[in-house]
Length: 314
Image (tube, rainbow, N blue to C red):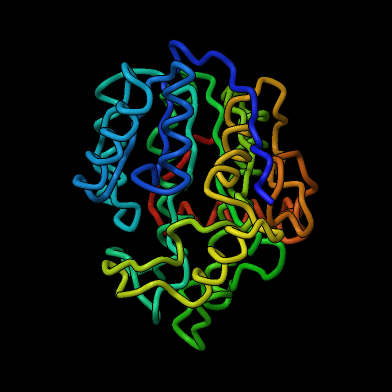
């Protein structure tokens, strides 16, 4: 039986500038397309310029006249994050929407970033933490909505404070959960600090459920030469409409959180189906690992120390 399409109503985004990480393929590309179709100027920071150019062509083919452009970004390099921050600050254009969407998941074996951090923690969390800090003046100028994309994996687990970089007893799934829990705690703390200091930024969280995205697909740059058995199972279940979402539904929670006027501060948006794996997007209760303000403040302090990028005290 064919699935019934799921849609959300996007507001008119004419005059808004949006930045979407991980927009060169998959659900990130879908987000960029929908934002551009709603009138936003969309900045797509990408690691692979060829994939980025193909994504731009696809967007313009679907939405003629779309205002989309590429910038260079490798979230696994703090120097690359700093360079993007410098580039966008020189452009001196307020940012109204930032979707921290890019990520890596379960590389085959422990790998590290250019700065020596465990790859998932360094890319998924620390890279985005540093990016928000670098872009803070532009986000404040645009009274931005910042949406950080976590995962259903954040529903259990914890930050491994005794070994943040998983140098002992590496567990790729627990390390992935840590990276998404840390990103979620940061997103919530960002909203609290924005409120306390009058930054004018609204920060919330989203997750896509489970869908056949590119996270577990073949990624030669990560040392994964072919699709994992897990992604093959996800594709099969998704195609049959069994519990899971699709690429089309996976993008919707982040778009809802990032654009709908009444989306709440410090809230989580995810699919509303069983297990939050698929279905229409809706506001959901925070997962238990995300509820501690003390843990969030610790993530913030530690991330400033590790990245050597500081937010203003007020």
